[in-house]
Image 1: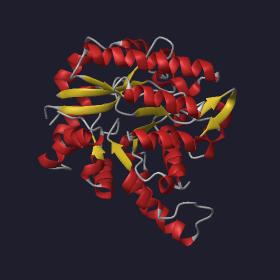
Image 2: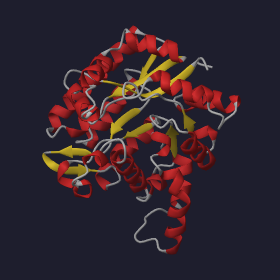
Image 3: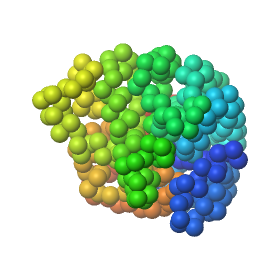
Image 4: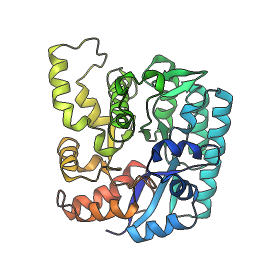
Amino acid sequence: MKGKIAFEEHMAIVDTVEDTRSFAGDSGNFDEFTDDILDLDNKRIAYMDKAGIELAILSLNAPAIQSILDTDVAIETSRAANDKLAEAVKRHPGRYLALAALPMQDPIAAGEELKRCVNELGFKGALVNGFTQRDVADSAYYYDIPEYRDFWQVVSDVDVPFYLHPRMQIPERSQTYEGHPWLKSSPWGFAVETSTHALRLCGSGLFDDFSNLKIVIGHQGEGIPFGLWRIDARMRFSPRGYRGKRLLGDYFREHFHVTVSGNYNDAAFRCAVDVLGVDRMYFCSDYPFERMQDAADWFDNTDVIDDSARLKIGRTNAIRLFDLDGAG
């Protein structure tokens, strides 16, 4: 399929590229990842052309801003990263758009940076890499807590999508994975961390307060679509402090959008489509941690969907979600 639109497409700046090392693990691919994630002008666009990707909506690598302990440095680095993103979009009109990196260490500053990026730089939303650390290494701030309500007011006001991207849990909070470091990263821990954060948002009353929020998660829904029926069934039996006014599944189906990033599997895709419907599903490649061509080969040929749904998931859903005037 030609004309695909992809997001969760990673880039880095010099100050954040070292974070890519944790994703490379012991694969020996760190140098390759570094070269690919810093490149915004050459190989990346050639790969897009070959894979039939017309437009990539770029975002900063992980955990990047979210792991910076000094709030002032986080604010400065997020601004520098966003300026770099804006420059790439300007150099390649029609090929790139951008999602803002945000200094969630300071919710007010994060809201101000989001407004700058949307209103002045033309960004189409934000991508934040999971929980945020602040001041001390053994810290983890999740965005359902009351401290972030003013931030969510800004997201609601500017009315753009917010992509909740995975990050690894910090060592001080990783006792569950002790002795099994492979569990902590993308094979398993990413989904555990991100799905838990997403469910916290659903259970906090956030969507009762802000009915227009649009949250995006990747990897076919981080396992939530598979477990959603049971979550609601058990919550009916015993709410256990749940603060939402409606079933959790209602919030998930109405406020969450799901990409196929890095999970190119028919069974997972079928489950996500069955639970959410084709109108809330989106193509992306998760480049450079997955190959664009692998993503495209699977998506263009999977028989889980017909060609009408393929066009929606590969292109027109993103046009609607990000309000991409003139793309059609």
